[in-house]
Image 1: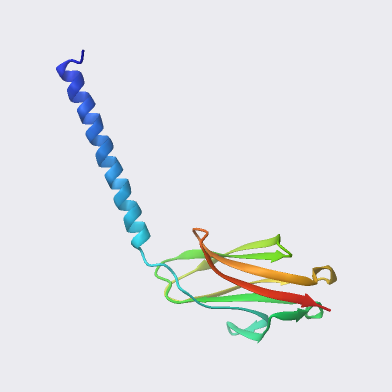
Image 2: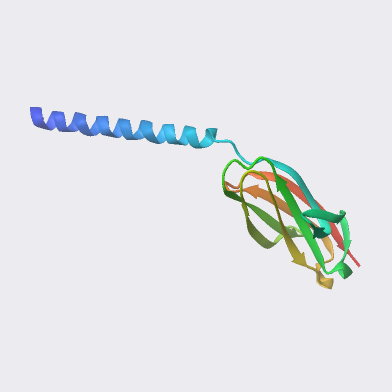
Length: 142
């Protein structure tokens, strides 16, 4: 049988647990309500000049030696990051974590090309929580 003091202690612990659970739920709601960065442009290109894509394409020659993935976000409400994940024939080749800074940000990643890289490729652009924002597909040829 519980004594009066034990019962008060149990009720106190239960009320603290409830308050803590409500505080966590409120924090989660606030975090999900925060505005996220918006991807306004994503492209593959041969090179980048002054943060603009040059020779955007879906097919590249391995002779070009490099392919770039350029992404622009606007707005960027708070400092965060995104991932450019490169795949060749469904095989993971490279993951690049890239910072984003307010109020607007353009960033890029690239791969060096080799003869063995011919074939279909795709790049997944994901936010910091892993949500897929866009998939870019391209091919490498002779």
